[in-house]
Image 1 (cartoon, rainbow, N blue to C red):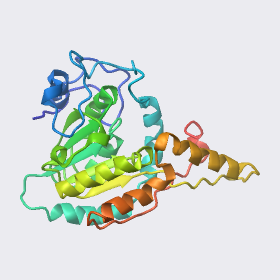
Image 2 (tube, rainbow, N blue to C red):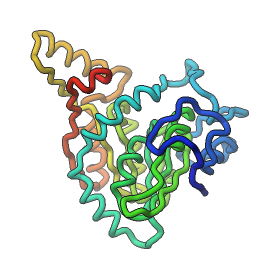
Image 3 (cartoon, one colour):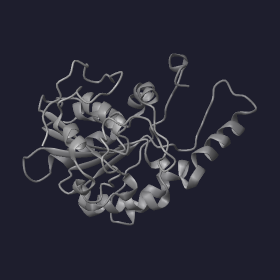
Image 4 (cartoon, helix red, strand yellow):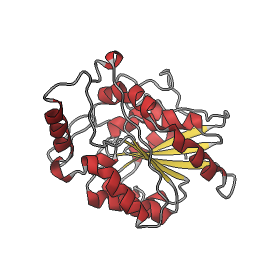
Length: 281
């Protein structure tokens, strides 16, 4: 389904501007050509008739949620990488190594943004990998496709395709054949119903999930200030706006997966921001 991207952009860098001829990745080409009826069942088609999904940029209408700026996602990527829980990698590697068959690993990355999870995880796993990148935003899918890694830890090939869709409408059908489901900074912007939908889809597909970098409700500032507690409370209230779970998402996700028979492992992954991260802070 896919071929390697041919681009002068260094792997891991985010290009300045997407365009219809920047890439030759078959997943991106497929996204441009597909009609709404061709979208994989349960992937949440949001393409309007006649729309060229991968070249529509930031014309967010009132019926669509706000979009994440790629500049913001690029700014936070190094802090995300430093915070990720490495203790979860060995159990994951063991699980993937024991999968039946030798056809390689198929990873579905939900709400992929600019693809930071793939850039971090793919080079840490052995064996050939095929990443299927899901996001509502075709603008971000473009960045994720062209900046994706091309080699696994052992040098095996990594390929990629994109699917435009809504995580809130995910079904097990969308995850058929998945070896792993991943997501970064996603759980806290979902509602309880959406987390239940995610857990049901993963359980129905019978695959593990690595869900990382969720807001946990703890903000600590040094040096301390009398307004620190008020600031932390305001931040957490903002994260819960519009029915989103914010700092309650980790507990809700643990319950949703456990209710469906999953074994849940939880590890901390705090951001630690110092003077070198002034712009991000």
